Length: 187
Image 1 (cartoon, rainbow, N blue to C red):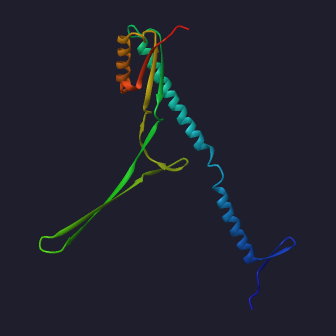
Image 2 (image 1 turned 90 degrees about the horizontal axis):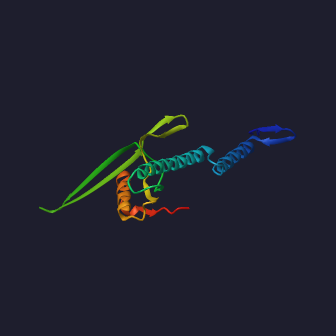
């Protein structure tokens, strides 16, 4: 007859099989609960830093545009606001695997049926870093400008407005529909 293996914990006696089962259930519960825990402050800090970086980028563009515009004849004092479409974007290195399958069905004398299937599989290239593996960044794209508002003393003169719009178009590669120029009022 097989002897039951028991373990004495304090004043309790537990069957070893029961103990293993209870520990297994506890482990599963801990794994399930771990998904409810916050993923860490690093991701939130990184997102906040990227947002702050985009704000700094917009602020620098505003200052540079204001400086250039105020030097133009007829513009006078100017205020510039730049809005962004998005923040900085990373371009990641990818490896691509392409499979081409060609199936030909020859039925009668000149009757052929050809089927082609192309399957493309892309995967990001990962590199070891301080925080584990991360995708390899190949380029970093600047934020895209959504629109520009210029308020200046010469904003009521159509010639000045045209010069300001043309300058901003060239400087930021924007269409004129994304640029607004108005007169700055005293006050």
